[in-house]
Length: 363
Image 1: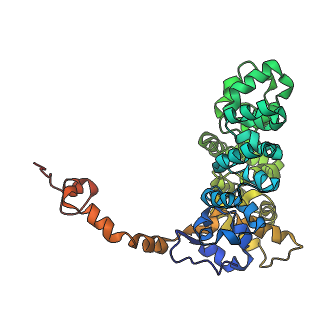
Image 2: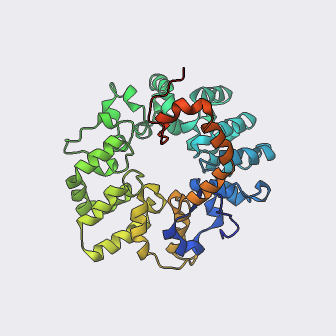
Image 3: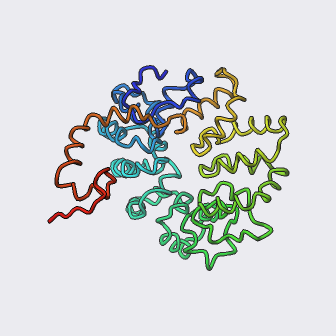
């Protein structure tokens, strides 16, 4: 499916380990892959199907392509597209443009209230309160002041489970400790300072999904806690860790704890049913479990779903250094003229240019 793509001058190319499985890659699903952007730029936007556009909507690196598509159709697309676009944090400005033209689009999904600028949401609220999804609003890091107001004027609108996932929860925690959902707090990258890692009820499984480097460090230092959960409730711990882009190395170490090949096999299959195949931070681990994936892609089997998930993982593409070099050759002469101009001679020492280790007197 990818034969129509010219990899010669792109900054990314297919990784060697995925090439034997290239026949399973879906051209449509590649639209969702953030490392495939230069490949997608080779495609005429007029030929993009609506299905491909739905995949492209969530691609954080494809905003400029989305801008071209939306300009072409005057932002008149179905609600399903804007629901997909609402998961793209780099495309909030496109959602706001569309919502200004058609306010009903704000009713498309939870995500919109969770990522829109709070001032924009308040303007839409004045038009009609129905445009605000309060569960989504509780997750919005920029909506803390509004949430504080709601806690006084309309507390029934507060969903404490969602609010506990808000990265700015610490700003309103002091007077509401009894309402906090600690499982959500454990997975909240902005709330690690609130956690007591020595407490016997520490939510280690939830912490496995926390992206914060402090949380990752605590997981590394408390492998014995993870091992306990691994033995008793390994499905929960492994499934949660499988989606953590910063936890791939811990995932591999957990597997190394148990050398039982039969159990290893069953866990590998389990992982392929989770988010690990879409986790760009688990590249080495994905490579190690590919041996469990049969070389088939029947649409009526789970393997078809596994291949679909893998299509969206940026790790199937790696830097194409030959392609980058070819792109740089375009301005090679101009760059050399600029860098080696006599006015830059005083800078050569700091740049590490051989033969210019001496101090240069510009006077």
